[in-house]
Length: 212
Image (cartoon, rainbow, N blue to C red; front, side):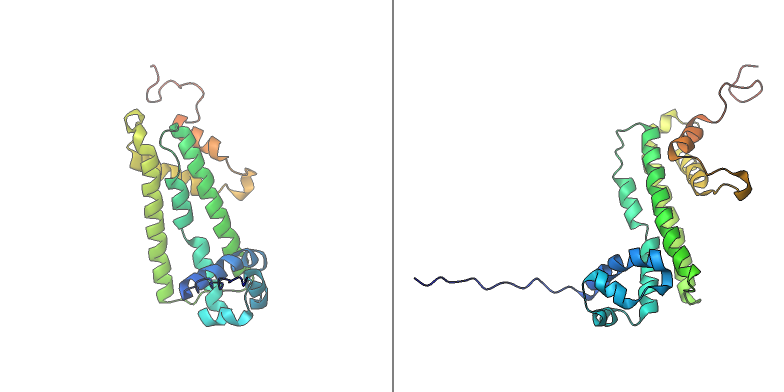
């Protein structure tokens, strides 16, 4: 009796955009480690592809590095993390999770930017700068809106409206400690505690809300 074998189906070919995304994902850890000194052969090995495949979707190495930089700055990942935070949790827990997600995003972004700049990679100035500025503004707006959404359920318990609380929260989160202070910065939990409860252990006479 002769057995029939079913011919193997080839996996569907990647689109150009999918291949770009796959290469960038493989390149990012190497760029964070080596900066602009990373080679396309290293990236190809990490992606499991031939080196020539890189140049079928990127004009040159600089274009690939720019794509890595854009991906590191892409707020989409952290916005999805913020959207996944349950509104059923206490406000302090929601904001602590948000602070942790945002700090991790800033850390990843800073590592890639620092590695590239430290090894001499500079984006060309011009229309790209204007797009980058517009992108940063859109990113900050979307992040602010995501934080407002996390705060909104507790609007009635707050002295300020959620938009202002979100602005203060982001301002505190993005402020770096002074180098000479020796302060390594507050933890996310400490930052949120200060935001919601202030720094005074007991009301001081003459402060708003304290007894005369």
